[in-house]
Image (cartoon, rainbow, N blue to C red; front, side):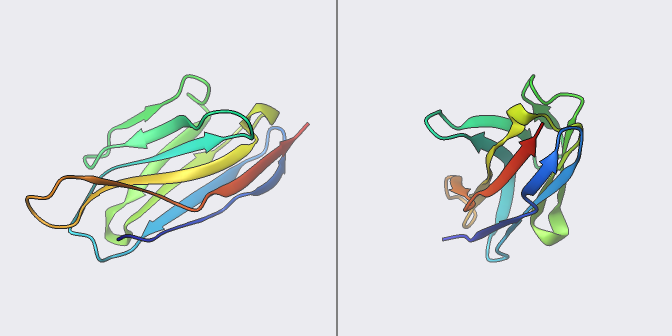
Length: 121
């Protein structure tokens, strides 16, 4: 079992910025990829950004050039810096962490509780 705690969501005007954080419990052997997804009511959960254990990021086309994903391995934390926010970015944002409980085990995916982001026009 692993606990993910998200923070940083809120209400912001279009063009503004927010920084999301997701901290994983320390009782983990290792963390592989980490990422952010978002979901609005009635629609599927979509990938926003991911970052590998080596620090290589990927982004959805809709957020390229505006969002930046980063991680602090010492703190077991992944961040999402969101700039130039648009009303279409309004969603609940979920952190996902792929982790190993011990050597030789298969990777497990865990999700955070979600944090609401509202962008007003």
